[in-house]
Length: 508
Image (cartoon, rainbow, N blue to C red; front, side):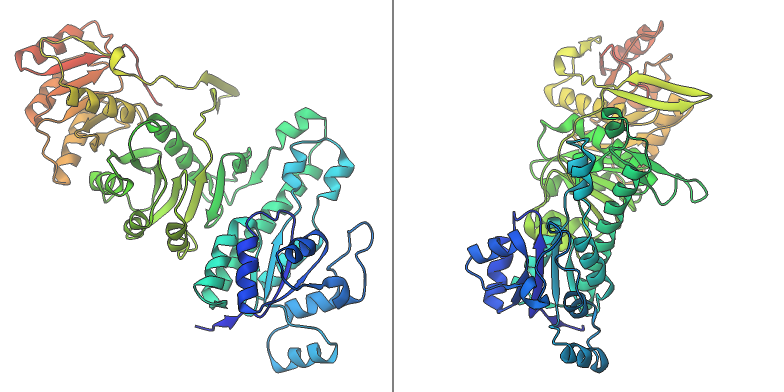
């Protein structure tokens, strides 16, 4: 497994939060620590012995701190391959090996967001730190690199659970993460220099632009104009792609409907939910959501409205997925999930939905208010002789939320706060219903006692007739057709309940 012990470390960080447990672990393992300036003082305040970089290089920090670690005695120990030739050169020039580098870069983007003062912004361009990250990442065969405080948990696991022993997979995963951090950092700096600066409008325009690997397809270029860091902590995995971003946006919009509910899990594919469930625990919610369509879940986007614990993480790990989003991850769950380095793990900071949405078309752009209406029991108008039961009302509202976030025309079938199936993106509402019934049966669901939601009204009674024959007992729809009475009459004749919301949720 190519295990390597961590015997020495260079620590140079801007933010000190979360560093103390790592220092305690280093002290217990007898790790030799090198450091500079404020980081050195912080380490010493925790009772650890530190060798100042200035002592090692025989040069003080110069040029107002612009030059501290840029010296052969630092980068020699960092970049040396642990072979006879390189090690003999280290011995010749009295250069110590460096097994671990912990760096937290100057906050360039945070500074950019708070000031227009160019001199202040320029001073937050990290030179030594970014060089340390790249050098350590390049030498991942022998060196462990921690490029951000977001990776402290991974390092702590190595120090505590593995007694400071790293294997090649650990080091390579951290190297990959290091180049992700450095790439993002350099892109932010490039965007700053590549845009005309006009005060506040400039700051808004570059918060922030990111070049994506490609667009919807490999032959299309792709860009993201915004600041994902305000919404997510990216805890693991590769950079988000164009399609990832579109799916993540759809997932966040859907889960925003369930923030006040019990643990809820959703699985999305191509922006459409193929599994949604609310249950007493997040594990049960995941299992019920997956049961809705375990085939489509492959390669999907997963999202929960509550923290992911270890049992849930272990079950999720049994399938392949692209992105997992949650408000938090238990420490042991995060450690477990990070074993698959390509999986994208996003800790969402808020579910705030933009007040407006935009779409470019023809020779311009259209804009509309975001669809933020969430129907409640008080909004429902019972229009049939039979009123829905309290359990059916709960299911009707659940199904209505799901229908709101599926492509029109759409039908949702649900029971016990679980999406049993859906038909969406159809040119006929009847086809959408038939698709939903067929999908439900294909995954072993009987529809007796289930409810149906439609994103728009029924112009004919054919849908409620088909639903009744399948075992559906209650229906929610916006109403508004001149032939609403035809569907209502059919429900009355067959002891079905129907409620109207008065709100249409088309999604083109």
